[in-house]
Image (cartoon, rainbow, N blue to C red; front, side):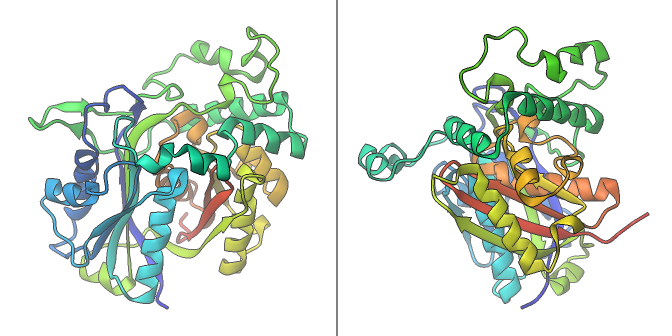
Length: 375
């Protein structure tokens, strides 16, 4: 098995569902990212495109056509709900490690008006295999771990402060229409700070104010603890050392391990801890050796829950602000989570990190990255 490296990453700005990206085809979102990634590759052919998405199965092929690119081994799409793009990245990493692929682009997209598979609305399947709604699963996990609303308020406030300090990531690719006019140039989500924020505007995000004007919630999670759904896309370029050298690319991180688990709906978001433990064992690391842990926190319980179950301090989790404040990118959430981990490691000049995502059905995937230490 050969080493797998991440050479590049790109994502579109995000917008609330039904917002600026509602009229943009998924293939054009992905196509814009493909052009940016392929530009510095000295004509090196990409072997495969692996997407996680919840739209039409032709999207990968149409995205390649939109970007004017071809692949040696084709393009395909995985549909696994919220963990789709992380599953796509894991599959691409496995193929590169096995020598089946030299260079692969993997990630995902989410557009609210994209065509959904009919099986998603099969009531007979839902009755035979029930899954808790995401918020209910998060409430159950919080209560099992003894986390109350005040603990989630504190994490939500911490996430907003982290986002305020981080600003915008440097990997955004503006979305343009067919005429080349800009549709969206920077993130537009409820938690994203303006370019020159007034500190007074953030007074209400303190933990003591998050639900002061709301009636006492009958559940653990309230509106401030739930990520807003957003549209967008995110891709990463993975490859072997030789392929990267031939394309003139410098590796940004090495994939040290990846793991997937399915613990069932009873586990819900707690399944992420099992996936992280498995990937740590595969990488030969201990939890206390992690410099950064990136958890997809579509519900506020996700990060405190992982911290309690793994023994990783909250100060090392989601240090650039997670999905709770940046928005939940649906099928693209896993790729966005891994991209944030890589940027966080580079910005903090640290080495070891794990990105993990879980859904309400108890499916979880984790990927470990190791960056070269810099000073």
